[in-house]
Each structure stands twice: as C-alpha cells, then as structure tokens.
Length: 134
Image 1 (spheres, helix red, strand yellow):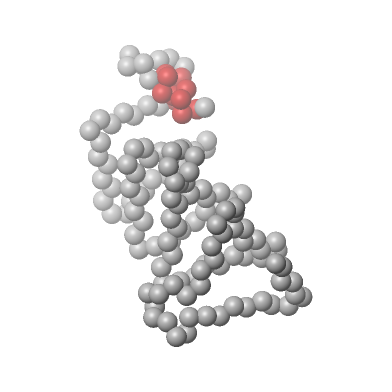
Image 2 (cartoon, helix red, strand yellow):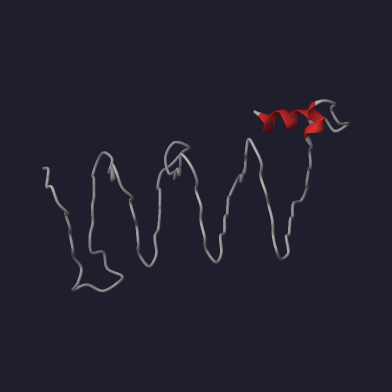
C-alpha cells in the first residue's frame, strides 16, 4: 500500500489516552523500517527518547551511529557504562579536559608515547604503539 501526495502528510492520535500509554505503533513483522528525508532533517522530539536494540551474539543487538561530518552532544550529564571494553580512538588529535577535578582510575595505568615506535622500551611497548597506529 502506498500513499503519495504533493503536499504535507500528517497523522495525529492519542488525545484520549494517558501519557504512559502507547498511542502510535508501527510494527514490521519481518524486514526493515526505513525513515528517509531525501532533502531534509529527521527530528525526534519527546520528553524522553529510548533507543533499544535487542539481539544475541555480536551481529545483533547493536546501535550504530555514523556521520559524514560531526557528532555533537550537549547535556547536564553524559554517562557511559561498558561491561567489557570502552575504547576511544582517533587517527589525529584527542583532547580530554576538565575545568574541575579530573579523576583517572585504573588498577593498572600504562602510558606509551610514539617514541617507542623508533626505539622500543624495556617493557616492550612498541607493539602497543603499532596496535594504536593501525
């Protein structure tokens, strides 16, 4: 079924429901749901927005966020919790700054500079430099 029109298309529902109730449900039993704005923006606005991916194994249950230019965020608090691994990588510059207190904790902290790529340290850190360069 296809609905085509030269002007705006609007759906409104839920005026007789409570805030916590589901008002609009789009369900694709199989296949993908594609929302595309060919020459415009996609805006999601609500009191809360939840992105939940459910799946098992490494190939399902993932959320992927890609941008050809920038990803920027602004909030009172930004928290990240990772069960196994958290990795920040940049092929160029990376800055970490705190105008208040910066607390860095690790049961073991290793610092490696690019100088190990030329002459390996006694701890064998050249392999770590090569890992991050690739």
